[in-house]
Structure formats: C-alpha cells, structure tokens
Length: 301
Image (cartoon, helix red, strand yellow):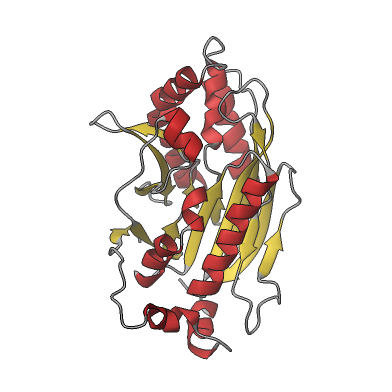
C-alpha cells in the first residue's frame, strides 16, 4: 500500500433495533456515511452487535438469552458486513460478537472483511471478569496478522490491548496498524483501554486505533452502559504529536472519527526515532529468553 489510508473509527451507539432488517439498515447507513467521507478502513467496536439482542424482547433483559439471540444472528450479521465491504469497496472490521464453536465453547470474535469478500477473524485472547464469570465466554488460542492491500493489520480486542505481548506478537509478525475495538461500561474502563492502546503504539512504534461503543441502553442487561471516545494513537516521536494522540473523538458522542494515516511513517519511527523501543525490546529480558508465540498469517491482499 502506498499513500495514505483514511480511517473511520466508530463511536457507535447501542440502540434497541426493532428487528434484524432495522439493524442492517443502521449499519449500512454508517458504512455509507464513512465511505462518502472517503474512508477505506472502517472499525466498529467490540460487542456493538449486542444491540441485536433487542430483536427478541422476551430475552433482552436476560444475559444468557441475550447472548443466545446474538449468537444465532452472528452468521447473518457477518454476511451483511461482507456485502457492505464488497458493495462499497472498503475494508471493515465488523463488530465483535459472541460466536459458538463446534466444541460448544463461546468466544468473542471480530472479523475483518476486505473488498473482494474474503475475511479473517481474531478471537479475543484474555477475558475480563464479566466475560469469564457471568458470560462464560472463553479466550481464543491463536493470534493472527492480516495481510491486506491497505497494509499489515493486527487486532487486539479491548482488554487484549492492555497486555503488551499480544500486540508485540502482531507487530513482530509485521503489523503496522493495531485495531482495538472496545466496549467499556465505566470511564475507568475506557481509560484502561486507551492507556493500553497508547502504550502499545509507543512500544511497537505503530498506529493503534480504538473504537468504542457509546450511550446508555437500560433495556440491555449485557451492554447497558457504554463510555468512551475513538482515538488514533501514535508514538510520541519525530513528526507525531507530543502526546501521541493523532485524533480523538468527543466522549459519548455518536459519530465517526476520521483521520488519515501513512504507513510509511512506521519504518521511519522504528529506524530513525529519538528512541527505538521496537528494536530495543529484547534488551529488557536481561539474558532471559523471551516468551512469545508466533502469529498466524492470514493473506487477504
């Protein structure tokens, strides 16, 4: 990929959609608006698809019932995202959603769709207490790097971006962009994810993009409170802003955050930066072996 990428990171409102068709219309409108603004990489938040639980009012107030409704709709929802990526010729990270595996385990899966209809997915690796103790959602077992025509992309879902070795593994595999979709029910949660995202941008000298759910949804037992702001984060070095924030949305506002990124900056940061944390990373282990797993490569280019 040469030139710039125009990114759209969603501050996506959780709303009680009347039916699946209404949800499709809403998502299509969001995608269309982003493409009209010239965006070619669109990022939806973690668990934004949980608003689909509203299509079954009898179980929307029940956690297990809500999960089952969205699990049942997951295949059709991803098919919709695929059609939108193809229709508008854009790359879309769809909302992550609970997905049941053949083993019966449920994971939190985010799927990346490219303009020719191909896709690849990343399962969230580290579960929060709520996911472990109340949702009974399991952690994924594989980290992936996605090679796309826009460039190499890693995905660190919400809590995952708070753990340095996840993004590090993706960056070592070649990622120049880390996508961090999030869903947090307190401002403290938002700041934990944001601080993690900025730290990962600093350590790996790359772009990290966060997109949150926003708004109150008292009808939902799963995603009733949503706080946060979208952000595009970079290392605080060279031609970057002093605070490492390239772009930042207004907290709680329903909107896209737009920004242009140039992946040619990443090798320059890593080679010519005032500091070189990406290269100097191994030195912190003081002679001890570094424990990390290789990322699986998914070619979508």
